[in-house]
Image (cartoon, rainbow, N blue to C red):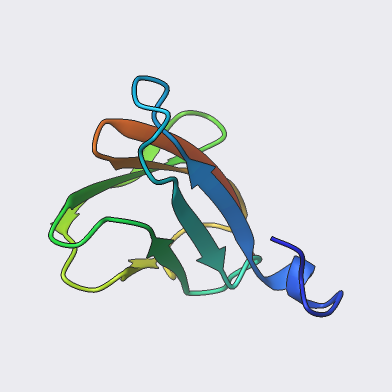
Length: 108
């Protein structure tokens, strides 16, 4: 994604998920915003994901699991609460339809 303005680069992170087994499958895109965050981060998902299960596992850089949750998507957005997490860098592993992508987020 090419940001509309330079400030958008600071507030959202986008990743694309495409299956290596089926190249004709529509790519799923995930945006994490705001990034950096203070108390929550939103995951916006595009592509054919209606009524699909999304699994989110959040780790700190020491490998400690901060969140491990699964939701059936009725909407294309999911909120991850980070307010109790210490300041630092975290990795969110997003799994949709056996497709995996890792997003780095920053907690202030």
